[in-house]
Image (cartoon, rainbow, N blue to C red; front, side, top):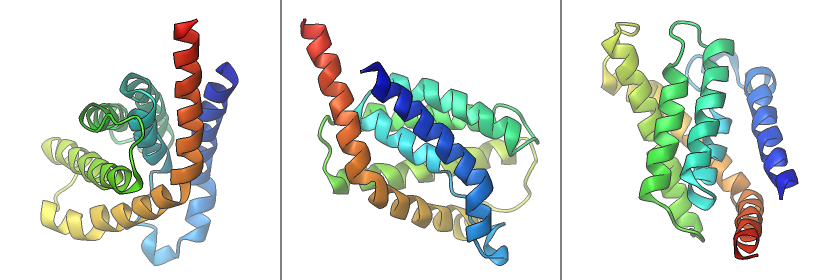
Length: 176
């Protein structure tokens, strides 16, 4: 069981590396300031629904801090706070052991909206952005939401199976 959790953390780290290295090469130059996909966050939403929201909270804080340090230096802690909080809230609201695909895609959409809206609100409060929420919604949040939705569809089946195996093994260990 410990191996599957280590593989999950390695998957998250690999996605973190892909976000910073491969994705910028794949995106056209005109889209690079518009679309900033957060693939780690989508996997953490799956962890919060299928595994446990506390695990997603801790992983969200850790990988959010990595995002803060590596990618966004304006304020340390914003991604950490927002990623941990939004994965926890989504896991709290939608805790379904065998969530069907439409429900999980709803979680991806709502989680992505919550994540980007909270991030915008924090940046707005501390005057790091001067644009309106409407402009940000149309030019950043909705394009990110589409990318997150497509990525969620791609990883739905394999990730769900792995997280369900982890949950079954934990139940067997508690029963023993």
